[in-house]
Length: 327
Image (cartoon, rainbow, N blue to C red; front, side, top):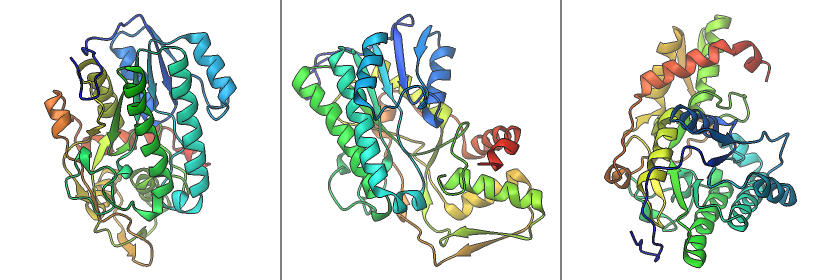
């Protein structure tokens, strides 16, 4: 198969005995991908924690990738956070992510890694992109100001992947997931995204016997959520069935209002109090729903519904509640 950028590659089943480096293997997405690969029979899935290997240190990254010589690599490592964190620390989100991406991708190129999957974020698309958002909406408008620094870093990662295809002819690809959630998510009060933040907030309210919970904004923005286990399944599917220069949206193709999502979480947790909305706080992008037609054409659709996914995540969170509440 020859793609539009001239790369000749026919996607096929990956070698289950080859070394697969999952950068960010302890995070929400990376841990799900590592689990999926092992479940599918991959015998040499490797990774290092951030304390073992600082991906911002270029020399250390090159040394590690040169040591393990992976055949496949999934770049799931990133500095991530919610609206508050992104708004407060834009330099950190821009600088850290660009360094992580450049170091890992350059090391992969230097060591002739055959197949690389770069994972971005749906925040790369313009704030007022036509809904549902198609892949060709990239770079057609202004970004959401509350996370534009992070978005620029992820756009740079897509361009890096595409540039490797053009200059070196390697079949590297990228995927843009919608909002993700699940086991190993960030549940800290200041660093979490909306869904884990809501789970923690409602769970603590239920435990403390609070009469009400107050959420940011109006509750009217619409968001699409994908369970991390579904994302991991999509990553493996794309690596074995898709090749092309354009990033692939990964999502469910369905969205809900933040208010509806909050109601679902409250019901799953068993919180019976009132929910109030602080309209002085920002809503962020009014709607962010991905067009997943390209993904469907590649033969993949999401399997885990929102309520099922929330229930799984709440169960996981409650087993670790004591430790996570201390964060």
